[in-house]
Image 1 (cartoon, one colour):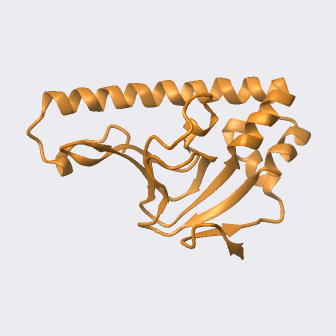
Image 2 (cartoon, rainbow, N blue to C red):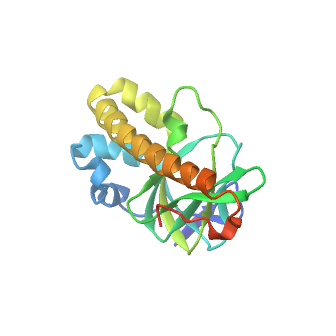
Length: 180
């Protein structure tokens, strides 16, 4: 099924016969017509990540928006004196890598690592941004849904930060994750 290797030798690329059908099953795209779905499918690839492998690391160049199709992806940030801290666990149909669509942030703000063997839809962020500019219906839909994801993650991260402040002596492994 693998059609080739990506730039990262640990990330296998998959090219299904009909990626549009896969996209139709994702709630984020429910309000798009077949032509719009086809345009998004043209800028999307499917990737399989082995458990324990990183998909990207904090500080790297930002180039894809991801949607989990199968598995679990840990999204961690580095906190001085704590090390890596889990801020989100992405499960099927969750979106991550959203900073790739923001106009100011041009690097990864976290590290994404597969907890289990996982499949993700990887949407080329530059191409999606161009598509949103060309088709304002797609742009409005994507940005409205992206705003909901960002607001939700901001709230979750805020609660985790408050927990870190309230319990400064906890070991890093005992920090609870609000999104697991």
